Amino acid sequence: MYFSKKFKKFKNINHCFFSRKGGFSKGIYKSLNCGQGSGDEKKNINRNLNLVSRKIKITKKKLLLMYQTHSNKVTVINYKNKNLNKFKSDAIITKIKGIGLGVVTADCVPIILFDKQNHIIGCVHAGWKGAFSGIIENTIKQFKKINKKNKIYAAVGPCIGNRSYEVDLAFYKKFISKTKKNHIYFTNKKKNKKLFNLRKYVNDKLIKLNVAVDNISKDTFKEKSNFFSYRRSQKLGQNDYGRCISVIAMTKFSQN
Image (cartoon, rainbow, N blue to C red; front, side):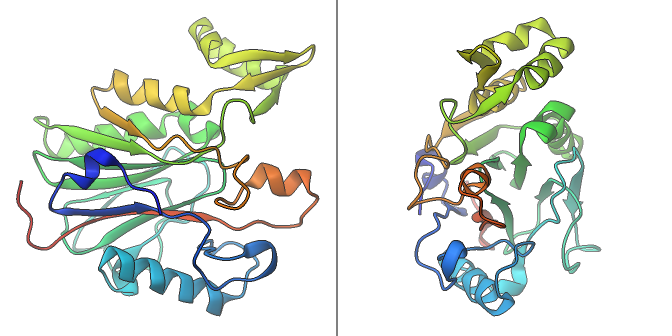
């Protein structure tokens, strides 16, 4: 379990970036796999999500998750749609107290957000595709739509580290074709390979949007015993992988 030092100071927020430890799943999903899209046994995933909900001090029914597709789509959760089973988007935000918002990842960047001034929370699934196509900008835009006067904080959780994220030249060229300034997120690995700094790419987007950023700088690829990793599972020739969960909830009795 990992926590943002900044978010710990907010009395009306419960949050956690959960590791893969302390759950009920077996085999390649050992042990706190929260990926409902994985091939893990549903009863184990449900037990894991129950455990996560208890830690965040909500019921499992109040833990809202997304059907994540690496898109730039944001859902605002209100009293009309809050009882939906799952939200087809890569970011969710709400002003409703007493519910938890969750994002599952296995190398992508989990971001949790809190607007201290207007009591809005959010979470974002930011892989390279979503970040490249504007998921972060779209999410902050939705915060500002609710109220332009705000003070937004972000905690950026464990994700694949820049030394672990090897990409080919086609990937590199895609970013450079958008703007030449993107070259700062890449370092040379070997002739046809580069290393990509996804964390810095995401951080810079948040900072540009006047969001105060705190990082839990853990590398999901390297830390096998602590985190699930899509890339590592591919390297090992595994046919599936678990997902870690990151959650934020606003308590019912909210105050600054």
